[in-house]
Length: 468
Image (cartoon, rainbow, N blue to C red; front, side, top):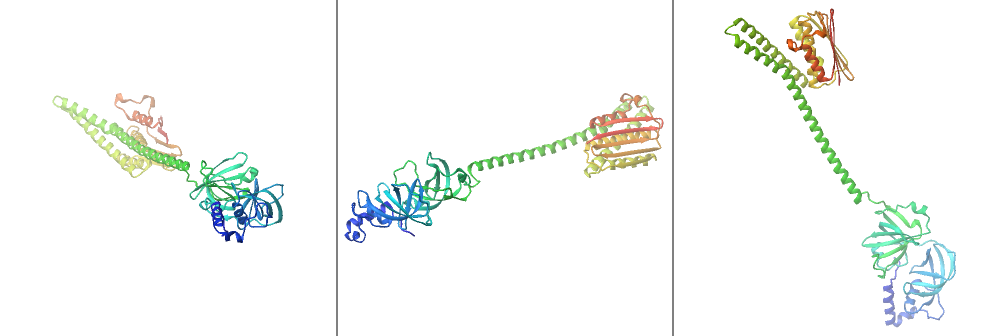
């Protein structure tokens, strides 16, 4: 590695030279008014450190900076040049400088005359860490280091100030103001990004303690900034956002779970309520009728045995009817547990009526069976059961057709017979002990279904249509 000399090193050399006469015998400092000879930049700096005033020097070096400050370096050292004339020079040019060297406060050649020797190539930057840069041994050299961008702010007329952090050091880099914005727009100047920076090293020797920056880099062009790694997405604000989204998702999940459980509980409660209504409309009313018949028979059994016998017969008939109703309700529940469709229940009911009455009863099913709730299946089944029973017992029909049509948006059921018709407007009501037609209408109202009866001398058509 090329040897670098800090100000502390120069002071040590100066003390050693004062104590050792042989030190100056090999390379003596030029006299203040004597002729200057070509020497290395390091030896010129060492010679100037012996004198309290500036001394004439002649050095050669390669231009490493020509923006605002002219910096040249050779294999031994680097120095700032302040020429007395304007000279068109480029980075990488080798020049000869004649002027007066001073090291206070920083090494520089004043009143310099510059002569361009030839165009050359830029020296490779010295790759160092931020901690090594803070040591001060490579001041004014072209260096390259890697650090994390903290932020960037305008630096007045100077340009843009990048505040960086690397190793154990905080430092800054200055982009000149004359760099085109188009070149800067291609750089990823985002806080948190890892950058590789190439520039002239300027060490803070403790004169500026307020900023807390160990050193600075004077950048020369936009190419002196290279993106090594974009900023990590897992920053503090992003972590807060992710945390907030996670909390929201958890709350949504809990809310959905509670909603599903409540919906399930509501469905169970509705099914239980429907079963309770069905038991009330069948078994409970049947038991109430049985009780009334038995109480009436008890009151007349001593004075009118024949009347009591009739009442007991009616009570027995109600018991049988209630038993049949309970069997039907159990059959419906079992069929629903097996996911049997409505037409299967109706087919079983039709088979029972065939055996009991020897009436020709047919069933026709169209469409794809749809999934129906217990309440819907129960009410539709009861309506079909009542319509078939009326056709068998009251209309004395010889042929009955039951049509079940599954549609896209509902179910249509039609029960048609060829028995003796009746006037739908003059059907006896509950006050005369007839509940069939009234019960069918009430069940249709519970389903919000359409209910229609067409009856004539040639037969009756009962139509029920419900929407899913």
